[in-house]
Length: 378
Image 1 (cartoon, rainbow, N blue to C red):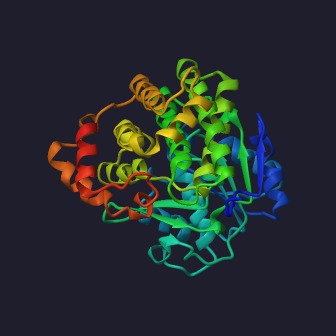
Image 2: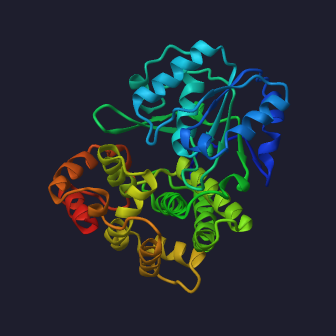
């Protein structure tokens, strides 16, 4: 048997309308004054008010921090921690996409422990204990509700990760109805992000294991099979729930079998140009998959047969994903998001700094390779 360690969120509640039970779930974790961490967009969309109502309905006294920014900068995370320390909270509820969930993890970790955020970037450097934590995703993308990872943007525009089992929440609450209002562009970006998690987990050079393989394969089948449905009809509750489930399964997979070059090349795009993470992944996905094909044809073929109707080869998987991304209602080239050709050298240099992820890629990536991949995406 392959030696491996597999860790994930200990309790997952997947239930249509389950957000109504959030208050009872939090009360069951002995929360009395939870901090709700979210972003201004969700407040404006009216998605935070029902969460607050559920908490109050269970007799809790919630406090709100709703200033999370995309690709959360250090200063936003530190502001959230400072706010939480002054609010005398006893638990944290993350509501939103990956940025809100990642921020919520770090607040729960840091609020009662005097650790400086930059000192815990890396693997296994965080110290506990942390406050009780519940995560409620509103996008089908990051899978952050089942990963021990938080990604932060530093003042130098680098994406840094805090990686620790302490960041796994106590409960992940998946309610597909919370994703019904996602616009097509956000649906597309987050859906492709989840598929990248599945593909890179399955083909990783580090910690590949049978549990992650099974989850990644099931995730890609769900995501590929439903993303066109939710783009065409955002109110398709069945397809929305399938996307959320696929995102979660992909999150479980890559949390234990880490991602590679797609993410490594995507991080500088997001860090320097404030491009959403899912879109950054989508922009470089096709070039990186084609680059990796000679090395991982057998693994791509396995995924193709499991997830893509009629597909049999690794080339079929690369072609299917390339065509799918091209159909999505979002920007298609680096030039479309404000990146100039003169920026590609800088992006390549920064991508090579993400060795934490590049070492997982099935094929070695050199600086010249990175530059060429960005050129193909330009």
